[in-house]
Length: 197
Image 1 (cartoon, rainbow, N blue to C red):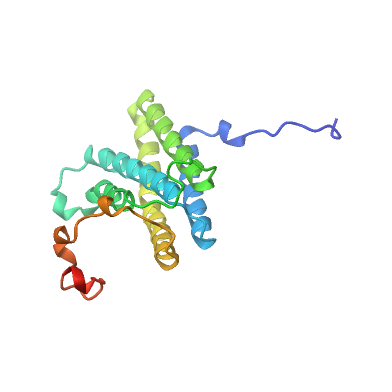
Image 2 (image 1 turned 180 degrees about the horizontal axis):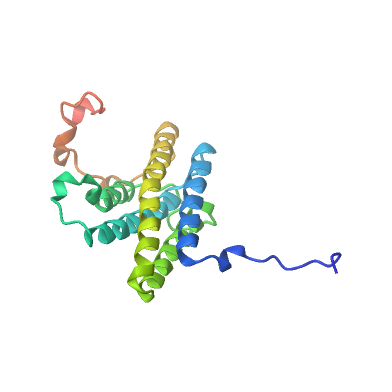
């Protein structure tokens, strides 16, 4: 019996939804780190990772809102979904040829798995009695919220690699006009073309 090939068993299928969501979140970060280190991070993969992170941040903030009613200015974490949306908007005009080709990419696949697992966990929590669901949901979302800065740091490294290699292009019509970028004027950390001042 041991000499016969056996079909591979997908162990993730046996994990509870919360554990699967946590595992796929960690896997997504690992995929982004690996792609960044090997300079293989594509814009389509980065956009998928950002969308999944924004969904996770929104889930965490919505859950926390059920328990806290403090002033938003004192709790900057409430702005996390908007921050991920800002990253999405910043990446959107650029392309490296992968946006429309839908390549088979581990980061993209990992982002889809993470999003799906988190959505399934949310549905599972909704079907549980609150006394059982709340501690599990709090543990999952707190863990994910703690990991999102790691994902952001990996994406920043990928963005720096794109800037160094010139791997991205953007049609000028998709970029913000210079006149609309007043926040860049007078900042020493930004390069501004002298002819466009």
